[in-house]
Image 1 (tube, one colour):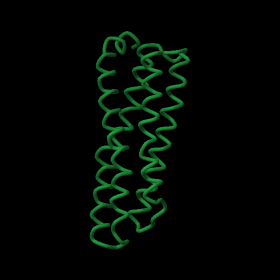
Image 2: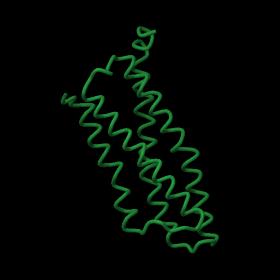
Image 3: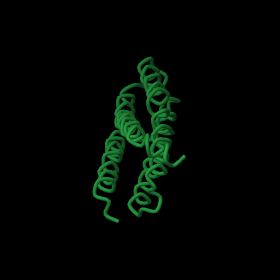
Length: 147
């Protein structure tokens, strides 16, 4: 089994990278969509349109991508025998943090779709930077492998 996984590891890596790009694109888009929704009153047609867009983003991009990232990533780590590497443990901690951010952000978007306004524009703009910061740290760990 290990040999078969190793043989397809380049394809696992391709899948992992592609779905990381999709996932992060969605995580960059969702706070922006929440900001656009703030311009519309609860219950208005404009709010309903943004709620629909955010729902599609979650269903079509975010949810499938996070699942694929974890499946490809864990399978790749098994295939390449990385589970004893300290850098991978740090990367997994950051990806867990990013996954938690994903869940929190989706919960905020669902509240907004129900007419609530839990976050202001400034907070949403700041929160929109979280994926980028985590991405930088994750890429450094993967490329440099400092420990």
